[in-house]
Length: 318
Ligand code: UDP
Ligand code: MG
Image (cartoon, rainbow, N blue to C red; front, side, top):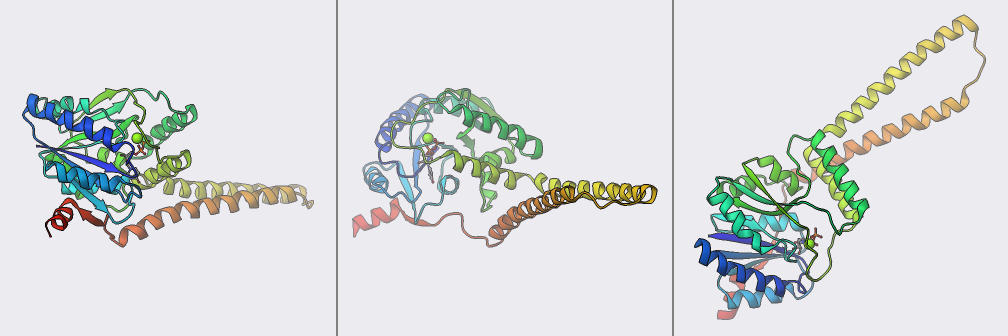
């Protein structure tokens, strides 16, 4: 059986299209590959009619299940909840806005079941329809993070991927609170087949990702998967100390040889600013890691369930 996990946050506009498309594809999968499908929707604390749509869908179709969070926990938590609660031998994560073509499912399944891969992942080959400035920063981010982290980050890799049961179980063992799935997927390893696809526009509704949000998300990825910034802070400190020491020697020699006219106030002011600034920067970097450690040590749950299709059925029976 294939479990299809769909994180949804305020997707009432796109859900009906998605449901129609995925149910049709499920029939094809059953007819051509003999695979049953299970749909696990994760309602990430939506404030619109998403949950109502899911309740109705689950009532009408026994292959449809849903988990509804008590508030918005973010897509990372939603994906974790779906993986934790799915029962299939294969699990695939898909967006609710049809940006991930359901037609690719059969190919992904074959890659795992017949070609011997553990993971089949969709990879965007073009960044068509994206603002150029965003593409530029995205490329720069991938170059940087691959240099400073030992998990593999693939440019254009989406969260649209099918995993075999062993890969799902491996993912579930990473119970960290700060989840950066692009890194987590790369970190667990396994043989991955990359299947190229063209970027598709959202079928309806709005994306929740602004440039600023993406920028903060990329910083999160760096802090979660690399400790190089901490080393940079120490190296910076060493460089400043070395420079200061050489300079001191130079001043002592100069005073001994030529006497000492009082001069150099502007130099001092600039140096103070430079050193003060770099101390602040280093403290900030340490603070980032400390904050993550703090949140991690609380061992809070990754998500909290408000209701599932089972609650809905029970209410219906009573
Ligand atoms: N999503 C979610 N929780 C959030 C934000 C988004 O579960 O807090 C879901 C959303 O419903 C969609 C998927 O994550 O199914 C991708 O979101 P979106 O389309 O907004 O992102 P984009 O495709 O622009 O990267
Ligand atoms: Mg989308």
